[in-house]
Length: 291
Image 1 (cartoon, rainbow, N blue to C red):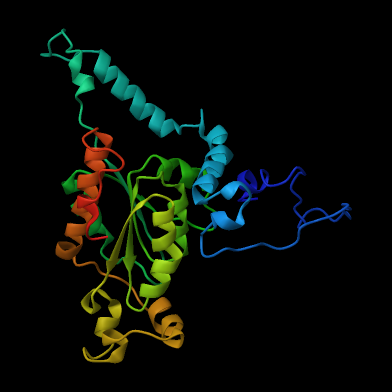
Image 2 (image 1 turned 135 degrees about the vertical axis):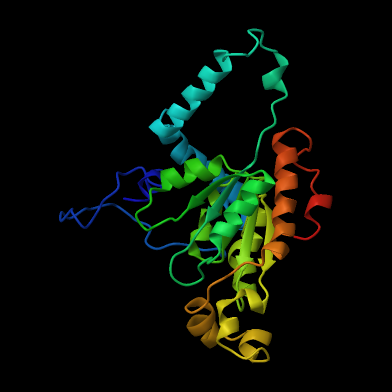
């Protein structure tokens, strides 16, 4: 039932959980199986009304918005209450007069979500990334999604974020919850160039996201300590047999913070200007020359 909000909108019939429902169900006809256009892609030429991946994004909005409204966690409500109180009640030594332009000119800080993995392809220096992002000016939230994590929670957090960073893997599918115009930074481990582009790079751009692919260098991979520097595993990564056994299952990432700083600053510059009204949705060419 993890996908109940989505699946319930795909049929006029109520969902059936066969794990707990042993009855026999009869229908005049049924569609069995799924159709796929490509990885995380909707081909408008194959869809009625030329629907695209953007229509699917709107579909997700409808699936989760009703559940999200009025369900702000107590912690967030408490923070918001304190903010409202501090804005309306003057403190000692503070002038009773409130400048009406204060809120109008208040600078907004972009929100960054760091998606972390457990097991292989883990980001081993996550603390350094969090500190660098906070020093840069981001509001940072770290997520470690599990199989049991509610999708409504993921939607709520990512739908209100400007930037998402994560190492290549299935969890990056959550980029579908980002609003068009947001930034996705995919950290690409060794040997993952092709699937990274096919599975997430191309679909992200089709969704209207600003995509940055960060290809790690051999020294940023845990494999650097296992193989000689001139070993083909490091110098010429290719082949599915290696991808599964080595690059997918035995590789972790330690970001070169000086090198990654350039990409993160690029995302911060764009998102900061965007949410503070200094740049329009389409004025992004110069900011994303490196994508």
